[in-house]
Amino acid sequence: MQGKLAQELTVNVSLAQAPEWVTLRRILSKVIDEVPAAREPLLRHMRHEALSITKEDQGIGL
Image 1 (cartoon, rainbow, N blue to C red):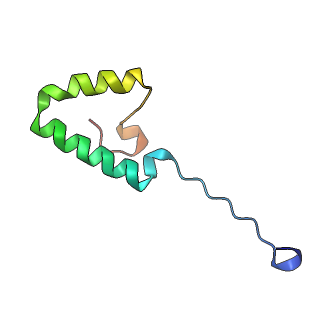
Image 2: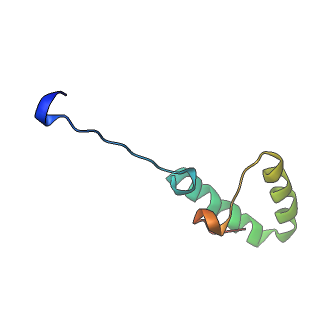
Image 3: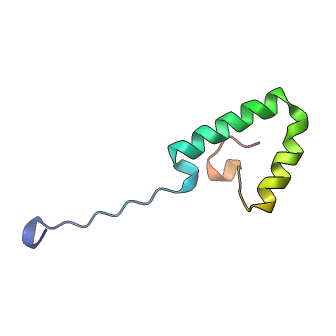
C-alpha cells in the first residue's frame, strides 16, 4: 500500500505467549503432577537445551 492508506503493522508475540507453547507448558505441568520424579530430568534437559518454563515468562511454572 502507498499514500494515505499505507499503515505499518508490527506484531510481536513472545514464545511465552504463543498458544502452542502455553499448551505445551500446561501438558508438561500435568505430567509433572502425575509423575513428580519426571520434574528433575525434564528441567535438566530443558536447561541443556536453553528452554525455560517459569512464572517470569507468564507461564504456569514447573
